[in-house]
Picture 1 (cartoon, rainbow, N blue to C red):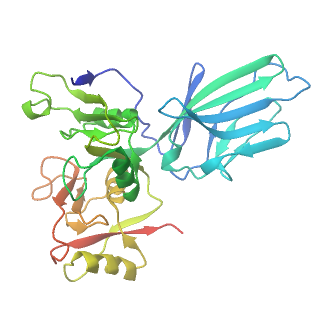
Picture 2: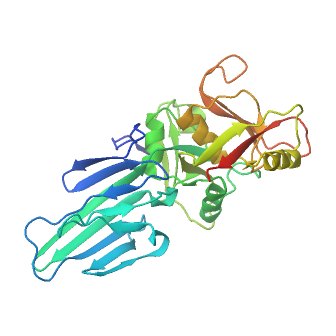
Length: 328
């Protein structure tokens, strides 16, 4: 059975600056990839002679948690991917604010701060949300060929991660309409519909997210919704006198001191930078696409979109190439 979600959720901030909103004991922090941000947490009242025990953890979708930092007086330990990227601000004895440097896509999510000091304790949860874009993805093999592990790999290969429900919901609120069902990071399979129609859940249903529920991660096969954030480099169309096949496109970017761009790069440039180019170009996965932010005749006349030409024969010399030069 398909369940339709239509309740209100927080959508992403359009600001490019880090900001926090306090909603009772739960705080939301908005940031861009690459930012250095603070997750606020402090103990109210007076400190005891024994000092604070502080634990920061990231809450995962399967109800488990990943340790980020543990502090007991002068002794501090950081964990996993957070090593060398996190520390406590410690502006005074009761401050447990966490600093995360060089934010990455996987840093998105909910963090829990626990402070224990004698008979006093406090728990604060902070939602960290990244400015970014959700895009649907299916591989060269075609529609509905990815189990969950394949979906995770497919997104990573395109400079992205599997999107969350909140991220897809935010994109739907911004007008995303896509009739192919795809994995989300909680193991559910959903798709966003703004214009109800017969092949997409029925013409009489309401607009919203169509939800197939949790699926078997090993055996079920769907597309995937990926999430990517702001670019840490330059995305551009390489001007050349002639069209290229795929191998020539890869080498042309290399000669220009760059790499052939990924699907996540073209979506980030289009959505977050307003990149507009009416030239179809090769991307790293062997697909051909072009980004249109200003709809016009012969160039996506009805909507702003990243137009998908397909996965053509890689020997065809019919297209240009989009390159990406990482920031050094």
